[in-house]
Image (spheres, rainbow, N blue to C red):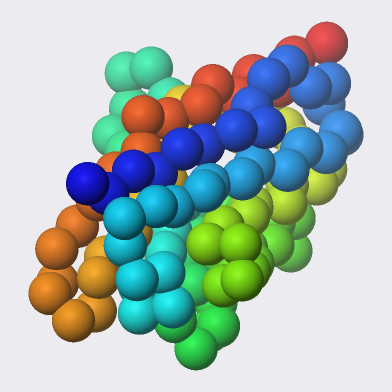
Length: 117
């Protein structure tokens, strides 16, 4: 059974930083592309950042330069470092994985991030 467990969410002040983690189990992590999505109330879910199995990164324009996605294949974990955070970054952030051998998609439960003073 594949599980994606996010952690690191919480309340942060504008301009602050936060690092999200997503620990994967039940999946061949090194063969998976990983991503972070977010969804704010009343808005559609949007891709924040993705990282391929080779480490290639992709970012939404709204976070480019402020966020860094990374992966540690020895820990089966993907990270999202967010800096210079803005109130509009407030959302539920969800981890996403796609197995590149089976093309099956998996989602985490999500973690709430709130940017507010």
